[in-house]
Image 1 (cartoon, helix red, strand yellow):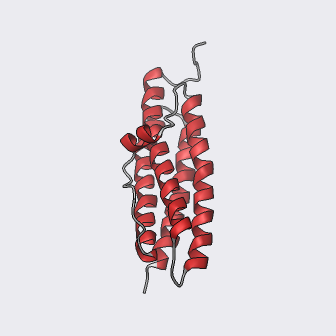
Image 2 (cartoon, one colour; image 1 turned 90 degrees about the vertical axis):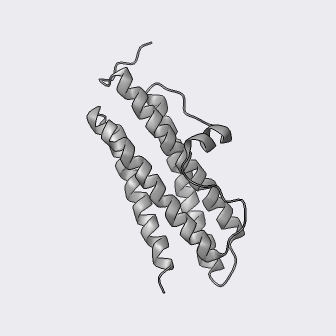
Length: 156
């Protein structure tokens, strides 16, 4: 059955493509944050272990919400490591960095997701797609706040 939600197919496709990049960035950041939760060490272990867990749990919910918005727009959501690795701008970490480097990488990842979301926002505005605008606004707010909190840990 054809989709008739007041957004042209061209705009829905552009939105789904942009949201696919956001999904890939969010999932890659989820994996990185979960990895750091498992592998953090040092004097801040307990607080970082708990903080990273809170963050990856929030990202897990976001992944589902983004994928479901892509589906609501009428397109399949990417769902494989291969697809995510082709779509994401976040660099994978295969080593175990020290805690300070973990924090720095997570700040960079949070900020990267904000930039991706901000890039999709223009298309969502043009398409008069308020649900996607709302989703993007909430994601940007969450990632900006998390980046600020992580960045604060790097202050001397």
